[in-house]
Amino acid sequence: MTPRRIVLVGFMGAGKTAVGRELAVALEWAFRDVDTAVEARAAMPIHQIFREFGEGPFRELEARVASELLATPDAVIATGGGWACAPDRLEGLSPHSLSVWLRVSAREAVRRIRADEAVERPMMEEGDPLTRARELLALREPYYRKARWWVNAEEASPADIAARIARHLKESPDTPLREAQV
Image 1 (cartoon, rainbow, N blue to C red):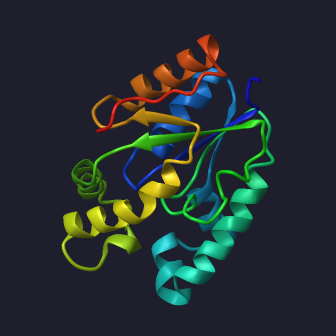
Image 2: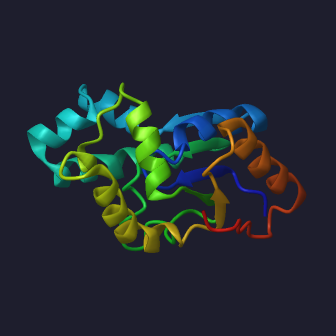
């Protein structure tokens, strides 16, 4: 069955937004970003939501916003790094949704996060960034592994990653894509 939407999951810095934009163009679909929609709904950046209200209220708002965006047909949806980390979150997706895990190592995620000074990452504010990334990734990876497709996002450009996903979707939509570990 050809999916009606693609849901990108993965660790912060994996490229969900950049790949999502490229993939939406390639498929001629809409692009939706959960983090951007959360910030618009709250009228403040995510790091401020965390500071003022804490992680719990942020996750509740994120879940509500994501649920609304997941109703969009013919869309590529970039989720936040922690969105998939709730029991049955990926298993509960519509059968018309294809979940894709963009796999990236903790080291590469930290490199990308440091390079993107425009975005504050509240989950990375405590301790050594690489140690924190390794800890968070170890906690989140079991959830990410529930995605139907796994794509190595370590070295390729967002355009190349999007092209691989689009090509596999066109050629073998019912065959899981499981690219090698990063």
